[in-house]
Image 1 (cartoon, rainbow, N blue to C red):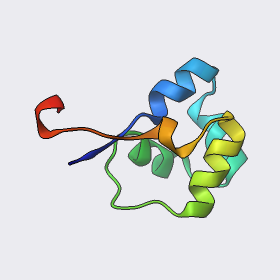
Image 2: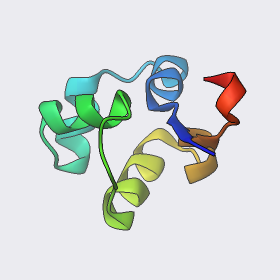
Image 3: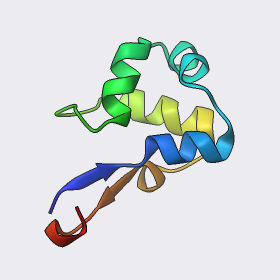
Image 4: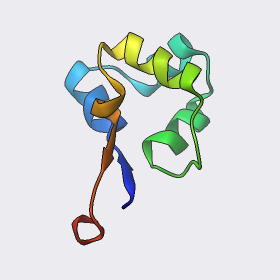
Length: 71
């Protein structure tokens, strides 16, 4: 079962721009873009925690397990 990254949706709901989030959590905009697109193989818990803290959400709001049919 694949994991889908819903970071872009949460950012839109919270009205947070990529540039602002990247600066706040200490990663590059390019790496944040790759994360939003789901093109990364992993994420450090430290980075995930910083994103959740800044957006006021939980990891489950950013990562969802979906079935093959839903993709």
